[in-house]
Length: 121
Image 1: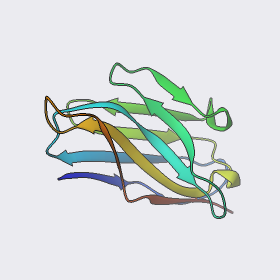
Image 2: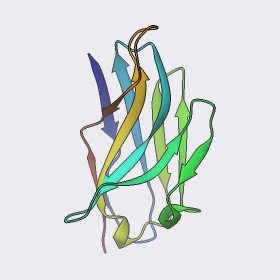
Image 3: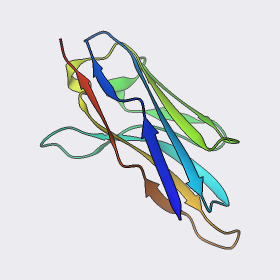
Image 4: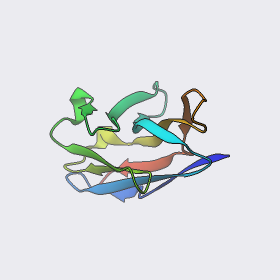
């Protein structure tokens, strides 16, 4: 079994900051990409940021310069530092990990349960 557990969501005023964290646990052989998606009410889920095992990052245009993704391979964690938050950042944020459970297995994507981020005054 594999679990991804997120933490760090909440309510913040515009211009404020939040840090999301996600920890992967269970039967894991290796993890390649990790990242974050978000889904606002009535909208499709969109990619926010991802990071490869080597540390290469990519961001949605809407968050470039405000969000920073990082990971700790030893701890199997991925984090998202969100600064200068805007009301339009309000969404449920989901972490994911592309991983395999065995040396001879294939990679599959696993998801966290989601954490609510609300940006409002």
